[in-house]
Length: 275
Ligand code: ARG
Image (cartoon, rainbow, N blue to C red; front, side, top):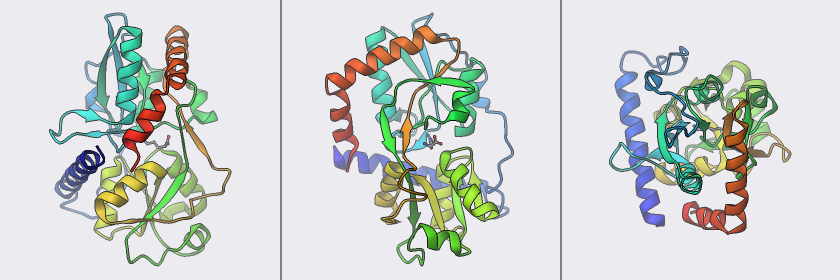
């Protein structure tokens, strides 16, 4: 299983790099600033709240091992997908997955384009103003990912230096890094683009969620620093985002999650996806 996962992740890496090299051919800056484009993926997509037996989940499929493309470059797989498949089977629903930019996921839930946002989303007070979150299903922190030969040694030294950082737009890593480092932060719509920039030497490091940093490091011969970005208190909890008015669905999801936790489902899932 380990091997399979590593291979799946490696293939996603390759996709990401290919995707970036074709879009950044004219200028190095092109991938750095996001234009807040409309997500075409959402054309014709509509939340159904399970009414027709389908639950529409939105995610940014650039986040192994939580959600990323399988070898066929079409199927989205990972921890979040397995969890939602299980929840849906318990609720008697069929899961449909839509890939979008991360900064669109919460808005898509709020505006009823999708039923649930499941994308390694950290529960934050700001996001809670717009959507409800299920009980937490995973704990993370922000890691610093660097090339093998990097001079970056730790959090404070990164802050004090003049290093550049790549983040995914709208993530907690983006918010924390932008606050600490200002315009030394380059925002990318997809993590695959940030990773491509790091591998091409356009940025000095990336700030991103721990498990995903480990996956990127393993697949691309990079290093995750021992020290996290921020302080020991900067712990994050992932939750499933549901529209404020959709309280019935939220209750059903929480009940399923509680049963799954009790039955050891997450122990199995953690074992499946840990290195
Ligand atoms: N946990 C972080 C956040 O909520 C990053 C999530 C990014 N997810 C993704 N699928 N790209 O901001």
